[in-house]
Length: 305
Image 1 (cartoon, rainbow, N blue to C red):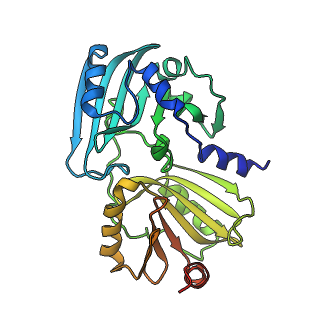
Image 2 (cartoon, helix red, strand yellow):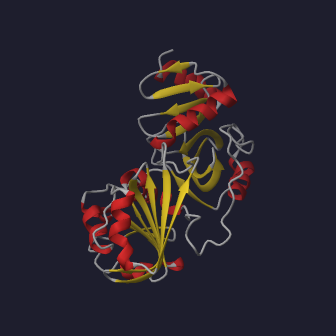
């Protein structure tokens, strides 16, 4: 199997219900999807300090109306004391956990799942768990949180993130450094500068319009650091996917309307803007951006317009 197919399989993880059981064992009965109050009551006896941060205007991709971060210090898990833990709740459901400090050893103590490697990360897909041993950090995620690659996001409420990066790009406009039709040698340095890190891979041939993809992590867009998937066909950028969350769909929609005007085509899964070059996807939360040539192709051959 090609390396690109292996990496794709790792990133599109199949998450099973076993993950909730592991979370419950690790965190004294706390489960993914649990409410804030219920989780707080269960965790309180096991932490030296607990702080709650509620965000007035949510930017977390899985939150529609409510975003909250519950931070625990010196949390006594069932398998060792973890220095820092942050539990993130989207609309009163636990969807994301990040741990730091004795995190890898404590959280992987009971894992029996086969590990899969991707860059500096180690994946345990059946258990909802991603680790980064070089920084002693662990993420426990719902399937919904895996889609926007939230394992690459360092929660700013984690105490060790004393000076978290401030988000400055809140617009829905596609960033200016994205130059469709530009060649790989010209654009790759721009993508790398805008990203926290990148990974380049050859595609498997299933997309006739692209042969190479650069995964760009941490690019700011619409108020949150994102994964951008920049695809090149014949050495030129022609497709860009921006990964988003279902909870922020209407926020993204309003930002796109603000930048590009009203929707020009709409069905159950897609809303189209900007002469068919910018498209909001709804069945799988993403923004699709196309070159002028591919926009014509998609309009005619895919959308039958």
